[in-house]
Length: 417
Ligand SMILES: Cc1cc2nc3c(=O)[nH]c(=O)nc-3n(C[C@H](O)[C@H](O)[C@H](O)COP(=O)(O)OP(=O)(O)OC[C@H]3O[C@@H](n4cnc5c(N)ncnc54)[C@H](O)[C@@H]3O)c2cc1C
Image 1 (cartoon, rainbow, N blue to C red):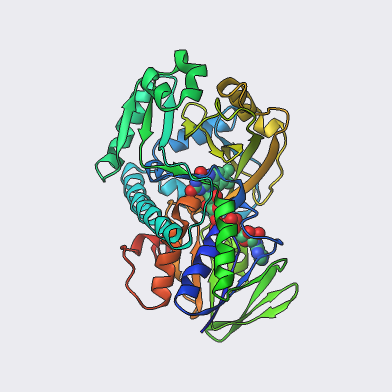
Image 2 (image 1 turned 90 degrees about the vertical axis):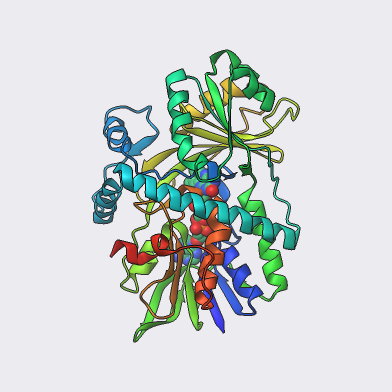
């Protein structure tokens, strides 16, 4: 059976991997001339079940309101007339109740843990190396009350099997000597000991090679423009290089899934939320950080990736605009100088931005679409690197008529209808 996977990020490529292992012919359509060039390139590299909280929570409406007049918040808005933004936003606000945030977080957490297991399996089967660092992640705080609140929040995940150590300033620096630069200001840190970091782009590129060995074809430099319907199913994907046909289609376009779904009359509640990244060459490996972390006061994440350091921040509602300027990244540049003054080259920084494919509630949209032969693997939001292997395994299990290893009700499109 031939399957066409639309999108060559980490989600599309892991889907292709599982389908090829099940013996199917697979073609992946990707508009760039290489895989994982968008969100799957730009992320903070965290494989982080210990950070799988739903964004929609009771605190968020107030933070969103403040962001309208303050420019130091982690959220930003650009004026929008897009009706899809308002319809998504209303759904998001409905998810901000405590009970919903709790339930959504547990779905995400379970999926993230499952996905970490599936990632390990892929790595065992392929031997792929991707600058993986498995020393945990440090979520650190400068304000004691904020630290206390962070500890309390973590209890929900701790009650569900996630292990955390709670560290004072000296213990934090013992885990990550690079943070000695701010030891005097640290209130403490939460150490998520089984979380990790790794370069999603390097992983995905290497998995493409393994997919090719199994016969997967990659149509790079090919933009899908429309899905062509034939009765209750998809007959072809129209592209700028002509039509591509298959028996089944998987939509794995990240933040771009909703516009293509629309061409088949399907409304997907996946909206783009822009995030900015800065990447620095490491010039002193001894002094550079060895594990990833999050400055919880500034909501800035960072991770070492081989000989580079990646930092990411900000949730900017700006539609599909992916521009990035030095001004957009000013907070990160400041924090980078403060945390890592000598170990990275501050003058050779690379600026980028890309889009998180966010659902209103947080879990992705997996499985049947309501269109006969169209399957969904999208909406992994701010955790798509962590969730990719697990989501792709679940979707391919569904496609093959196997019962997925997880309860998928809260991950299916039907939950929004
Ligand atoms: C700033 C930032 C930091 C993040 N940090 C983390 C993190 O630390 N840990 C984590 O787990 N997740 C993180 N994420 C989220 C994660 O990066 C994404 O959820 C994940 O990469 C989504 O993968 P994807 O394959 O669905 O999308 P993408 O990687 O965006 O892939 C979609 C692909 O579709 C292609 N495409 C788009 N339109 C078309 C078209 N019409 N035709 C053909 N091809 C098309 C694109 O070129 C792209 O390659 C972060 C995201 C951002 C933005």
